[in-house]
Each structure stands twice: as C-alpha cells, then as structure tokens.
Length: 400
Image (cartoon, rainbow, N blue to C red; front, side, top):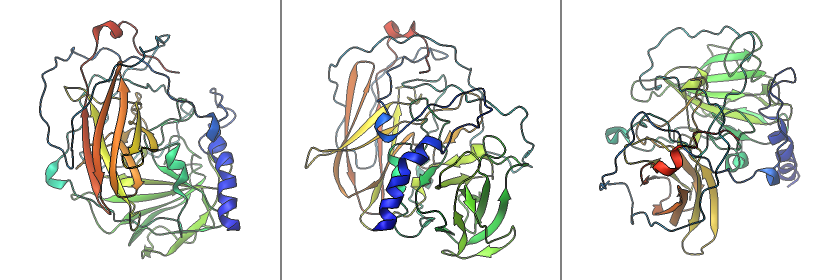
C-alpha cells in the first residue's frame, strides 16, 4: 500500500518534469499538474491541397453498431491565427528501408515545434491493411505488478498535453525509484547506455540512460524494438540475450526527466525516434481488458488531429475516459505512426469489456459511435465526419 501511495504522489512531479526541455532551451516549459490540463482549445483546420467533396459512403468496421448522430452544439470559437510549419513527408516505419541511422547530436538542440488541434492536414491517413489486422499483444508490462499506466490517461501516445510538451511517442509509468525494469519479451539487447553523445531521442541526453530490446518475433518481416528510457543501474550489455521477465535495469530519471518514472516506447522497422507506434496496442493488459483502435477522418481520408474524444459506458452513463486523436509533428521529427493493420489515429486502452459510446465534436457537429469491447481483443471503429466548412477555412491554423 505504501508503494502504491508513493507512486501516486509522484504523478504530479513527473508530469511537471518528464518531458521538459533543458533550462538553456529557448522555449520555456509551462507548469502542468493533473488539475491544470484544460480541455483543448477549438481550432480551425487549414485548407487541404484540394477542397474535398462529400459523398456519403458505407464503411464496414468491426463491431460497429450505429452510424454518427449529428447534434447542433455551441458555435466554434474563432482563434487567432499563428504561423505553422509546413508538413514534411516522413516514410512510415512499415516502408522504411533498413539503413544506417545518424546518431550525431544536433547542434543547436531542436526547439519544440508547433502542433495543431482540430486540424486537418493536406494528406490522407494510412488505410488499414485488413489482411494483417490482428491483435499483437506480444509484450508484458515492463514493470512488475500493475505498472501504473496512469499517465496514459492524461498524456497518451500522440498528444502534447494541449501544447505544453513535445508530442508523446510512448507511455509513462510510475513506480518507486529503483523498481526493477523487466524484459517485455524474449530478445536481444541492442542498446544499453547513456545518450549524452548519441542521438536516440528528440535530442541527445533525452533519456539520460536507455535500454533497447529487439524482440525475437518480427512484425510483417520487420524488427520490433522495446525502448526503456530514464533507467539507472543498467544490468545488461548490447548483444546480451534475455528472456521475458529478466531484469534489465532499474527505474530512474535523467535526460529530460528529473523525477523517477519509466518512459516506454515501441519502435517498428528501425531503432529510431520517428519509428514509434502506440505501445498500448502491443502491451498485454491482462485479463478482463480490451482496446479500442479508432479512425477519425474526413470523407477523403484526411485525419483529424488533436480532437477530443470521450468514451462513455452505456449501461451506467458514466464518462469513462478522454483521449485525443494523434497530432503530427510538422517538422518530420518525432512523428507518431499508426499500426499497419488498424490505421488508427486514436486509442482507448485498458478498457473493461462492455458496451460503450464514443463522442467527438468537430465543426459544430457532434458525432456518436457505439462500440463493443471484448476481453483481450481490439475493437475497431471509424468515424467519418463532414467535409471542411468553407466558412471556417479563412481562419487558418493556430497553435495554442
């Protein structure tokens, strides 16, 4: 019980410090605690390369029981436009060639880029590949016991805490300093070192010390890597063979983190910062839990980014979780990626089996989608919105 209370006590401290830039950065980080996370400010999407035309279509999705219900809501607030960085095409890890990765430290260190909420970029999102769309919960939790995946509820994969942090390309877990960090699967250690002089993250000295495990099992012919950041007392070396459950290091801090926690990533295709996928689609959450992998797109397949989605249990009517659709790093660095099979841009994870309803508001329209969550399975849902509204395009992009 004492350990559990200690872990919860660390939540505020870790969220305040886990992903800040160093003090010499030109960007000054903002303070953030659980209670301080505001609802994302509504912003207006930029004009795509061509204005999409809307033709209603029928799309088949797994366990989809109803179509979207449109409800009139309060008009969108008009934001102040700000300059945004044009997107840079970044290859998906599913198509990345196996090449030598440049580990040279950038000088100067890169600044935090701009992200956009309720934003529609001028490119289509990856389509699901149904031939490979199957659950792959290959990894056990990297910490013993519950693993305290609590930060995933407030700072999930693909989100920037409403403009306060870098785009999150992993999940964070809290436990006491010195807690054993374990191998999530059988494999080979490919990295076990500090990153002061070699680039493994957004900048050098991002993780402090890290361990990277390459799994024995490959996904569609590609290597899969588990990354453990901010660890101390590393107990393995590059080249070591490990078994699931073997101790690799101890939970610690360092790099961008000044309070103890574990930052965990899954990389597919190559061991680089922009090859990550959502760990919650790879971690075995145990009995009586399921996952929702969702797509929120316009009629032409462009992904809505940074939109707020809520999940409500139908039986009780209680709001269960809030998450956000993936943001995209417009500089092409640290980009998050969908799973090859699901093509998702939002995830609700660690859900009890049952009947739920997802709600999202975009362009003065509220969409509802029912979904059934089953134990140990991935439930797929797609929400196709109306096209852009011309009356809102003149406002352009904005960054909070």
